[in-house]
Image (cartoon, rainbow, N blue to C red; front, side, top):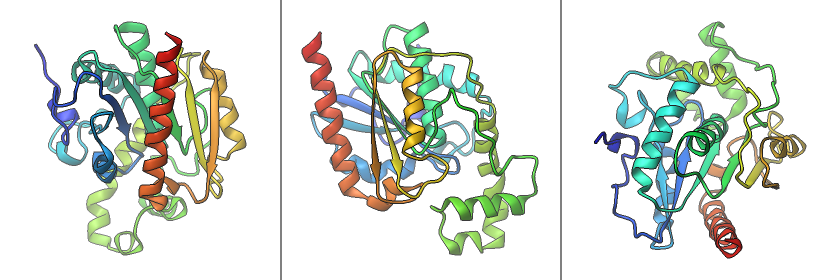
Length: 258
């Protein structure tokens, strides 16, 4: 039987109890599974955060990157089903990670015997809405650095380190290529969606979140948080604590309906 340990470098398959809710976390473009490591400090018997590492990223840097969203999410669905082993689970995705989470959830629901009980997305417009990006991968590297500066989340000292950026840019571009490969074809999920936005994120405003309701049959709840695009990391532990509480409440409500 094929195993997928490398998709979940900070967790071990089977270590969570059968009643533990797993929260698979998909990172933004330019990030890696490590951006969610601090959230794991909140894991316990009721809920376990599981950062997802994509091929060619972070701990898997030596592997070939998959820049096609359809191919990636088909494999991600296999990996999640393997790791979950029948446990209840939830998806969380930020920015590009929201698109990956949505598409993987769709793949699981349509082609597998399991699906997330809740999809939580942040920092991204709905998959059914096409928006022109400021930066595309056919532009010069300087345009990417400008985009990273506008988006925030990357320390100034890293952006100004020419040698380091020469190393990082090809890896970041891979993520942008992956994001560009996403194509919406009318997919709908039968999963409740929680959508979050930063008050100062012009690319994913609170009003834009309404369109997430168009891709689910189970309703949408949305909320705004103080901050820019990477508000979830700027807010730190309080945000993760809030997220854990909301997920536990939502999953409990779902179980009461069954």
